[in-house]
Image (cartoon, rainbow, N blue to C red; front, side):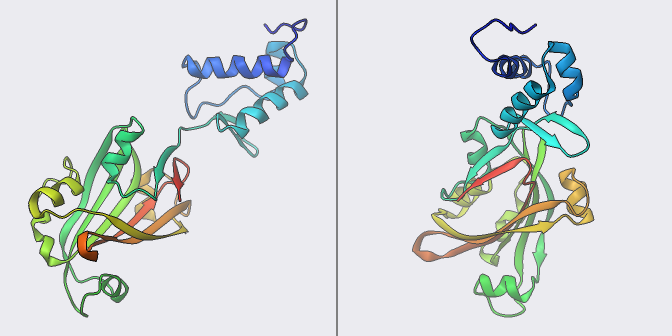
Length: 236
């Protein structure tokens, strides 16, 4: 029970109580809290006090209010700094997460004209196409489609479910990724993307597309990432 005689306001006490219960695992990401009325009755405070406490926790990203559904413990967001040229695996390790991958496609393809133009390749050129579902702590987070010139055909023989792409490029060809140029926009999940990322069809997703360069301004690959924006925070 909260202490009505304490100097600390009741809404602050309630905030700390909810934060403590989340930290202790009594509430887990995605769990729905009691309604405002139920919380008010449980802690013998007003609905206004409950609302102020939960609004404050929503502002700092600990709770998430969904119109007509209630208040939920927010899922953790993972961070990626687009100003740094890091592999997905390296970015995960920096935030203490475990990277994972599932190969969706690994083949030679003749991509569309837009891809070829960005890669500065002639019309009708074939490229090495690698598509992977990237996981963070076993949660599907990103669909990653990469196009490489035929110079990198050796990638088709690699086990990309377990190995870091950047490490393979360095070890097999001495390629060092040094910079990239990217664009970011919103897209809607197709049926396939929704099934892979565990979201609803037409859900808003982040589309990050860019060309990645090695030393001497060589184009290493064109990358297209479809990201679950509800679980991922990009820094630009």
